View (cartoon, rainbow, N blue to C red):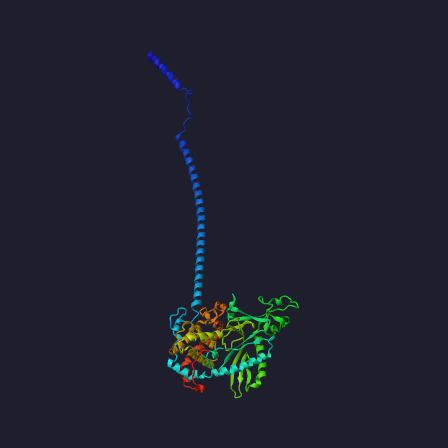
Length: 551
């Protein structure tokens, strides 16, 4: 009974548990087969692989674009770095060349250290065999030649100067008497320059060079303008200047009486009563060209020649000789002709003083072998002849007694003169030899003892040789800041660009070749010339020798 009851209860419990309403199944579908599941998994896997391939292609495309952008950026950066490096290199090169140019201008404008026999670092030395291995006479031969030929030949220089100066004084006084002080140009006293007044003249006949300064009448005045003081000036005009003629009323600093009318009862205390009756534009028409008016060199020389002719006619009866113009291309070249047939040449050159300095504007320089032709007739040459004389005189005081500097200059000038007569004139003149000597004196002022004549002459010729080979001979004053300030040189001249006196050789090759050949021919003939002239006794040797000094 009990067992039956237990079985009934078990059946009831099992029915209750398996009833779907009490415990419903979450998945009542029939389970799928294993093949279907594998197929779906393979399809899903293929789908995932396709998606992975697409993603990989997208990533590769993005990576390629990124690499391209990075490459472009790298190339741009490299170009910038290259451009920056190139700009830096170009800048460094430019600075380097500028430094070299400044160094060259500052340290190579003088003679060479080898030429001087010293340790001057600003003067580059000569390379190779100097003077092409040609030998010069020894000191004894040079001293004998100087005593027998040059010293005696210049003994009458003082008498020649005295005669010429006395006559020129009388001639200029006659010229002043013919001019009106109120309307004509006023002529001042002459100034002796060049070799005759520096005591190194050796060429015959003896020749005096005299500057004659002149000033305009009231209310005019001259306003000199230096080409070398301008910011941009052609190289061929550095040694020139112009002279503008200015009226007082046209000058910004002049009197105002010419700018505003004055009443009849008013008088200008500066110009006086003559201000109302100023001369017309006669001076501009007579001596000037252009607008504004500048002094014309051709018109000035024509006026000066006419004035000298009138003055000579006035005093000709007092003298027993004739006066004639020497050279057609140089109106200031005059010649005294004696009845015996002898003559005595001299140069009268009208000049204009530059402000209060010793610098003068001259229409021409006589005996310049390779001078450049001025671009305009209003261009005046700058002459430093008075400064050169002052420098020689100042240097002579510091040199040892009996210094041989003028002897070297005289011997070199003698050889050059004789060679010019043998082969014709070349591009090398006495002014170039003198300029070379001035550079040597400035560099080594203590090595000019009398016993060093042969060594210093060799230095002078070697410096000229170096200058010819380089086609460069710096002007001694223009652009030379080593010149002592006590000389009183205008600051514009000191700060100007250096002027190369041998610049014509760069442009004229035939002249350069002829000059170089003539120079070495002169060196070759020097021993023979010195030996031959040492055996001669000049006719004026009877006069006692005198010591050469700079006046």
